[in-house]
Image (tube, rainbow, N blue to C red; front, top):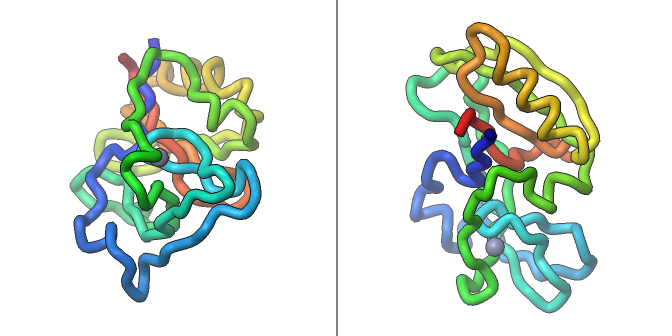
Length: 151
Ligand SMILES: [Zn+2]
């Protein structure tokens, strides 16, 4: 059983308002703006916040690099994701980079998979010795998608 967590560390509250590193972005095309709070893509007509985010827990490691993510700007468009153990639809239809980390946040494995294969691959990687958790990124743009743990 797998647990998918969209925002494993809370984004700084200062990043949730427009600033030099957080911008408001209107959605113009379907599937262009995947929200990391509800794990639904922004719909045309909605507005997203584009902000920097670091999904790593403490302690820090050389791999803790913040990257860009989207979240819905209007919380009425965004019901927080509830994990049911299945790969979220948002990840199932994208090419993903899956990175395995140990308890010291050091990378100990990686793979690139089609989203439909994420559940199988994540189960295999989490079954390996020394793997504590997985961080999944969208393979093209390289932005954080979701964290995966053993449930
Ligand atoms: Zn959302």
